Figure 1 (cartoon, helix red, strand yellow):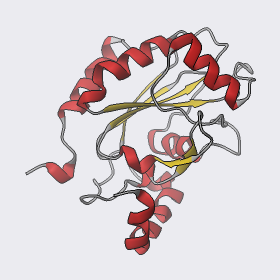
Figure 2 (cartoon, rainbow, N blue to C red; figure 1 turned 90 degrees about the vertical axis):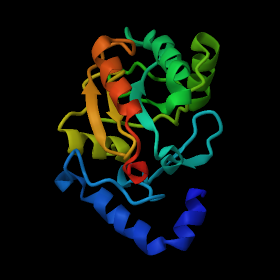
Figure 3 (cartoon, rainbow, N blue to C red; figure 1 turned 180 degrees about the vertical axis):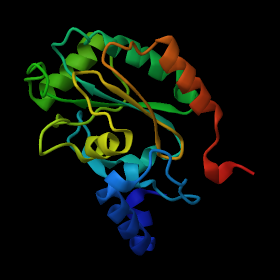
Amino acid sequence: MRHWAFRCVVAAALAALATVALSATVVPVYAQAPATGACPALLDREFNRLQTGKPESLCQFRGKVILVVNTASYCGYTNQYEGLEALYHRYKDRGLVVLGFPSNDFGAQEPGSNHEIAEFCRLTYGVQFPMFEKSSVASLKVNPLYADLAARTGQSPHWNFHKYLIDRNGNPAGTFASDIEPDSRQLLALLEKLLADKPASQKG
């Protein structure tokens, strides 16, 4: 069910989830799994899609394993776009989605407009995984997803291409520094484990 329709039916339940999201500093990393069909508090938010500028709910990705990455076009790690796209194509049919969040926070290495970023990603690396409009992941006006991830994991990005893995129940499961490549052994080991797990709502 589309998120907006779901919210109309169970507005009270989502209001409660929003309250949880706002108090994320007291939520453990491995919080209780959501009920069947519910949107995890971590994903219960909207961002504008990079290519279209239209808002999209992250609830559409519930039940998937999610790799969240803050990206930049002029960084020494920018070639990780290639590895991220390869990872997405390799595992998307098993339930992985990669979410990119361009940011100009570190070294001013993402100075362009959203249109320029979208064109760079498309033309240079053929990026097809979902990306969202440029935002801050480090300032007081922090991207609320990143604020929540930092509160729950105790780790915030210190440079471009920091990676968070989120399990099928919407809980942070691991973080990886910028120099950890998308095809690194340690990232793939955790990814394979998370992909093998079913959402709690599907377990017998």
